[in-house]
Length: 476
Image (cartoon, rainbow, N blue to C red):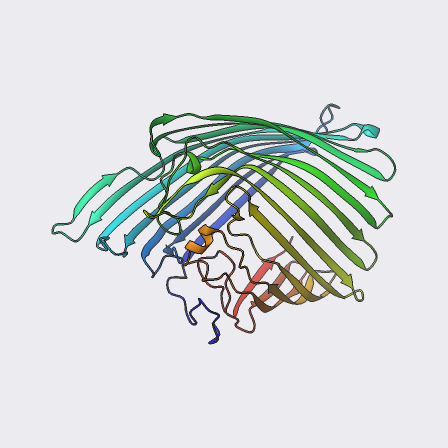
């Protein structure tokens, strides 16, 4: 990093900020006919020796080794001649997440020679289906269902090396070992042209959630099995002022049931202290209003949106109390913001582009900002394309304002957010892609050319200094 580090930052190489990982994915397609196919796919990712950089070396050492994710899915999709259904896609999936970590605590009064080995597994099965039906002059229907079921398991083993021989103690993990989370839902969406210039969309969704786990916190001891359900809807209009300028507006309802982490997990894998569950939490509900304009002209492509979101029963995570315990509760909040993007063609090869977004959030119940709201930020760049867009040169700058609207939780999180807030920053970056043949391309991305020291708001470590990625692609 640069020697002129902002307040709250340390210049130079950051300890424990690197890790190793490997990943792979395979996808096989088999055509059953000219109108349908079967897709079989698998993905694998595993990271090793991943430090919690917001804790190390300040007070606690947490090392994840490994963090592994595996996904398998089988999909049947195609076009139908039945008349009732025009397109269909049915997917069955298995998703498994495994995590192991070793913790040591260097805070005053703790035993730094005690290593706590934690493990956690989430195995999810799912079945989804989505379909469309063309109604001719009456529009298009989209409909379907989804079902997912998660089985959770965790464990903990403490090894105390301060005595000889070391003692080994098995304890329950933070996530209840008998935890499960199951949800299913269905949806129906209708798109239709009301006039030659006015298009409407409307839809409805039903969602049902059940959870189960043994809880031993917040005056609750025993098995809980809460159940949540709700109907939510959305509606929107698009009006063509001209062939290139469209006005859009929408109203969308949202629903989020508390998850197992909210309801039943004693989580010390947070920024400080231990986060307690709350089995009596209510589900979140929201209504979002959005209004915008889209421009798609010969030389200018742009869009701008303004939005407002009302959150009811917002699940709030508090700042740590005197015992370093964090509570969860329901409250009310609102957010609003604006976002926009553009690309202007200077000539057939060169273009100027950019985007920007702003978000404001307020926790009405606690009369403070919502935690970790990102600051005003955006990109501005100059791009050249050739080889029919398959080769490019791109130089852009990332501009980020400071964020000093902090919740009590943010102020207490001194390992992530410097005192007074996160400073703003500007980085200069470049990307180059060269088509070698019709089937081969190399690309070079160089970020932070001026080696600026910065931190994304809420991150556990500073951003990388000047860095480069060289890649080679085989094209279809």
